[in-house]
Amino acid sequence: MVVVGGLLALWCGLALIDLRRRIVPNVILFPAMLLTLAAAPWLPMGDGQPTSAYLGSLAGGATCFLAAIAAAIASRGGLKPGDMKLSLQMGLALGPSGGLIALAMACVVACPLVLVATRLHKGDRWLPFVPFMAAGAMAVLLAGDTLRGWLNLA
Image (cartoon, rainbow, N blue to C red):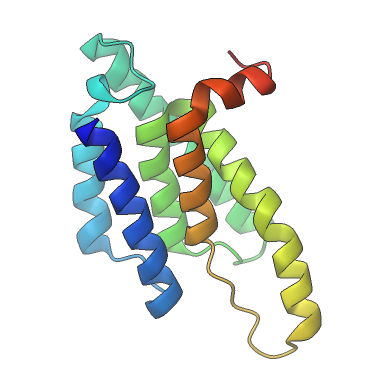
């Protein structure tokens, strides 16, 4: 429960920082990655076995980071480095399927808002993505089994 609370606080804090300052601070994110990996056996996606939990965590981090790189290339710079690093941390916490579900949820919610923002504001089209990523990650962390069931990934 402490690990879950720490992740929720981390993601809420990073979302607020991105909204206010347009950055995802490495000084927060890099230690969070290490702590998330260290806590892998106690995360909800873990099965209690340290070896499989660490491997699942690493697989999730790699999967989400590669997905974020692909999204950054496809969006021609729409996804910034901080977003990509956060996707790695989310994958470490949620595993491969949970991390990808969280990223997909963030995209589904953010895309219509981006389209509206580009229509309304011709100049600065910046829209922070970390709050959407954080919301998706929190949903998966708190209701991951239900989401996987709905998507037939259980």
